[in-house]
Image 1 (cartoon, one colour):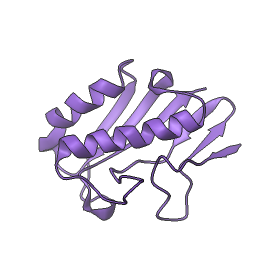
Image 2 (image 1 turned 60 degrees about the vertical axis):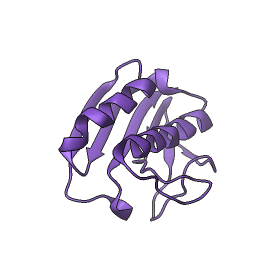
Image 3 (image 1 turned 30 degrees about the vertical axis):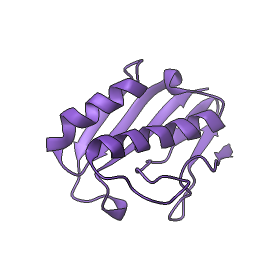
Length: 122
């Protein structure tokens, strides 16, 4: 097992890792829309979805993979009313259309509007 860590994605805010590589598979922790350079969260679902996708991408890159290798994602939305706007951004990054679960949750860390985790092949 290899721990994945990059400064191009936000550091863990709890007792977990950004991701792991295990037996040729990459597992990312859920990525919220925190800008790793500033620690700030952008306003609005489109900007937050964009930042969450960039954070997932940074972890994939640290593992030597990319969005084209993702075969499963789990997405969390604070409001299912944001589903269409979230999908519009998500589709720009996850062009291979991986299997996906997308659920609304009561709350997310730091009060963000979305979170994305991914599983990819190396």
